[in-house]
Amino acid sequence: MEALYPEEPESTTILEEDFNSYTDGSIVGQGSWINRVNGDNFLVQGTLTQEGAKALHNTASADSVVTKTGTSRTDGKQAVYVRTENRGGWGTYDNGNAQVRISKGNWDSEPMVAVSFKKDSNVAYYDPVSDTYANFAAYNDNEWTLLEIEWRASDKTARYRINSGTWTDWKPFRGAASYTDFDTVGFDFILGGTGGVYFDRLQ
Image (cartoon, rainbow, N blue to C red; front, top):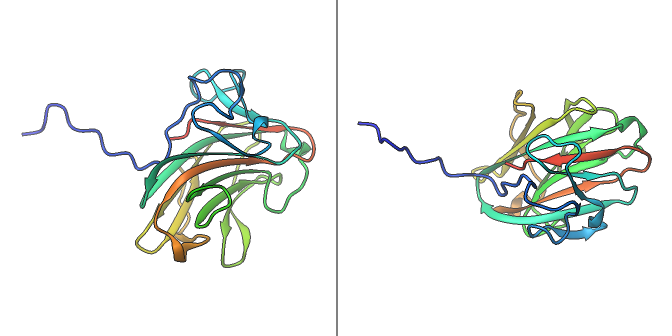
């Protein structure tokens, strides 16, 4: 006999965050988000959102990073919506302009996995073998893109996809030799021109 009220499956995400309870202005100091560098440039706003009343927006030219620590996950999956704005006006950076990073402890620590959105329309994951960002998909400017990252401890690898499409193969990630778990999510944006980026609904 089936249970009348089946249990919800246990979450495997580090953070579930929709920003909707935050006030307009800097994300730093709200909901335990921490400034690594120029983090005050990540602004809570309600002008353009993917879900609910609020999202994050950054249009600052200075390289900006914020992080938040959540639940430690040995095996897990983290998703977030990303929307670029006028990427044609961005400066050109080989590693991409907007980045989502999953790490242990803080932004600069290893191990970590990272995905960058580039000016040339490519989405790329960090490949420690080649020490470069490897393209795996293309995205559309001025549209919300669902990014998903999944990782596992059995062979210390991660895989990536956008918009519920095809997953990449399982790939090694940086610092895998010392991997135990991930517990931190971070956002980075460097503009070097005009335009911006939005982040919404970590899940």
